[in-house]
Length: 172
Picture 1 (cartoon, one colour):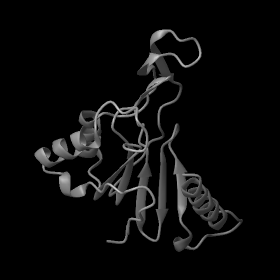
Picture 2 (spheres, rainbow, N blue to C red):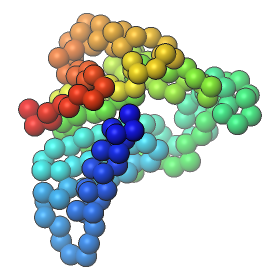
Picture 3 (cartoon, rainbow, N blue to C red):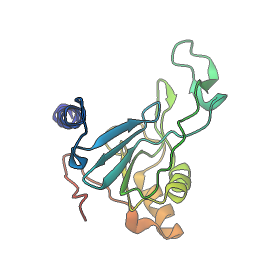
Picture 4 (cartoon, one colour):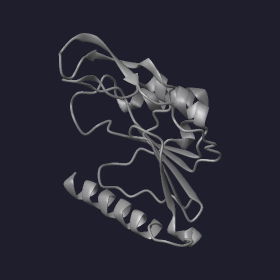
């Protein structure tokens, strides 16, 4: 996992370095646009990849954690301080989702299969890459629940479930 994180950091640093500078950038260099929270749109060579979409509007109850991470209070409301920027996501080649509902000491931290399917329908990406679903033993439901719901909704062909360390060719 450390090597995977290191590769991601090296890739992001390379992308940021390519995007930095003073004049015009060549289109192949790519861009990274942060939408707040963990959500980033990466664009390079015509490929558009959205990570960990949390696109809800500003408000005192953006989501609820079963347990507040600091105080331990139950049913802790979490505020979103700013609206996501205006955006036209247009065509997305891939969306990386944290799925399938994680329970941990900080409460629920990702989408369950039903929520993931709603997001897939809303964003309509060419492919969906669920991550953080089999590595540890604290998931609320198996990733198979997402596969089954996606198949039933007719979008199962968009799911790609990589094994740890497996590369996915995004050019296809």
